[in-house]
Each structure stands twice: as structure tokens, then as C-alpha cells.
Image 1 (cartoon, rainbow, N blue to C red):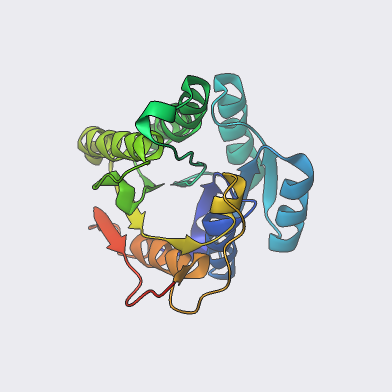
Image 2 (cartoon, rainbow, N blue to C red; image 1 turned 90 degrees about the horizontal axis):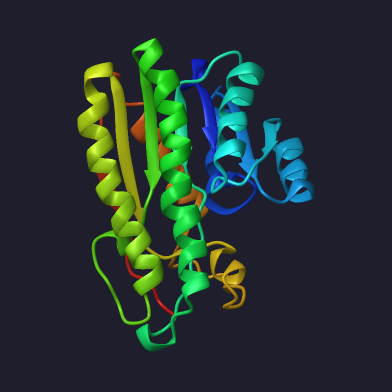
Length: 235
């Protein structure tokens, strides 16, 4: 696709991979909307990007419906979703809190489904569209302490396959990217402290570049899934 004519919604676009992706797509000419739950942080991000900011919690169906309608109205069209909103919680199986598990799933799984459902309804009417789901290397391999987060990303990966099968006849490309550890505020938001700068590990800009490159593949083809690892990460 030609990003200079794209109309893009990036969920969770106030920081991290979402912010970096929105910035790069804007630089390549796309009209971009971002969403987030924190109104003040969203406004700062949207102002910096020159993007449309929409306050919304993707786990709330009514807010998702409003968000997609607002995106279409404000951007004058809509053809690309970057499904980035998500967070994690880590603990051993015997220590998992049911409420924490539910909160992660409501955003990472239910939220992703709701935003994709509403977007797909619009894309199908126009017989074209693009969906990029931000999963994780945790979408294919579990690890000790990862039950909650890993389960949500396995679920997202499974939904991606279902959506790809359903939506290809409507010329809708459904893609998935699996980043390994990325230096963002993700860990801090989950209560694990801010990550230190480390030049051997991936950055949000690295992932944004791959997402943009996936989208720029001509519409007659698409990259179904890609995984991005740091070459030689050191602690």
C-alpha cells in the first residue's frame, strides 16, 4: 500500500511501540489517529505527532464503537488498524490473581477483538483494509511466570489466523508481528521498574520500521507474520 494515502488507527498510541509506529507512519504521509485511556498523556502524544487523539478504553464495547466512528469521521476515511493496546502481568501460577488475569484478557484479547470487529465491518464495506496485530514472541512460547500474558498473546495469535481466513476474500490483509524484548515503558507500566538504556536490545522504533515495511508491500500480497529478535542482547 501507499502510506502517503493511508488512514490509520493505532491503539495504545500514547507511548512505546504504538507511539513510535504512529510517528513513523505520519512521517511517511499517513493520516493517523491514536487512542489511549489517559486523556492528558494522549493529548501530549497527539499534539507531538500532529495526530488525532481519541480517548478510549478498548475493553469497553461502546467506547470502541465510538472510537472507530470518530476515526472514520476525523480522518476522512479509514483503511489500516494497528492493534497495539495491551499490557502484561507476571506471576507464578500459584500466585495468579484472578482479577489481574481478567484485566489483561479484557484489554489484550477482548479489546483486540472489539476494535478489529468494528474496523472489519468498515473495511468489508469498502472491500479493502489492513490489520496489524502486535503480538509477541510470547505468542509462540511460554515461560515460567508468564501464564497471564502468554495466554493473552497465544489467544491473539489464534484470532489473527481466524481473521486472516475470514477477511482475505474482502481484500483485507491481516498481519502479525512478534517482537522480542523491546526497551519501552511496558515493564514499568506493569510495575516492574523502568528499563535501562541498552544498545544491544530492540527499541520501539525498530518495531515501527518493520510494521511500516510490512504495510508498504503492494496490496496484491502481504507478510502474514514476522518475528523480530535482538541480534545479540546483553543484560
